[in-house]
Image (cartoon, rainbow, N blue to C red; front, side):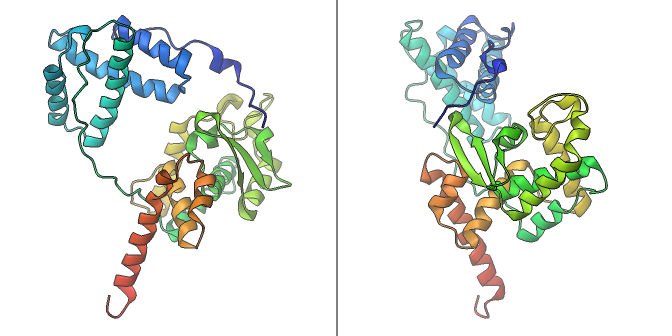
Length: 314
């Protein structure tokens, strides 16, 4: 299968180094970009974690290369005192392990302070989901008398029908849409390609949007972006997140809501209606089946709730 053409913007170097990180951290972030090929979002997550460590070290007059295991433990204790969750600290520790492993391989340190540090235990939490009625209300929320509302309706329908990540949705290009066959060609994490069926309803809303509203957002701009924002450029993840929050308020959904919650709903509702777990795995673009199996727990939890509520001996 042909590899996607890499946009020129992704070939440019990462942002200029900032003064709040050391040369070692900056070099490591360059390594992640040059040799690991991590996405912008992943690199920014590493940067945030390592900036926090660097700031703590500076306040405590400790240099990055001289950090001891006991001092690293003190840093983790400090994070816990600041209210960070075990899951957040485990992710940060993974970033720090990566940095110090790289420093050791490049002989910049003789001992690795992350060795023998145990990651905090955190149970695997069940993803938040919406009921089918909640999803239906959310999809009906946009004002279809406006081009903005029609665009948002098409985006919401596509997000739920295909179980897309929000980055996959806002980054969709017209050339990846096949309305005749009713499928999307998605490049997910690691540039892995998958074909995802849209379903009749999503196809119809997308056709309606393309026929009447997309040109309004593009104006005179030439762009392959399927859902353009201002100036014909791709919408940001944050912008779409705010759109969803607005519609949740309109229809009275008081649960925590994000684009990813619709992805969770997509997977859970499929399983509730008898879909095979491996099919859901392929549709979501998960590399490992174990990642998808969390949704079986959600489905079982839902069944237990229904049994308890409706069975005479529940």
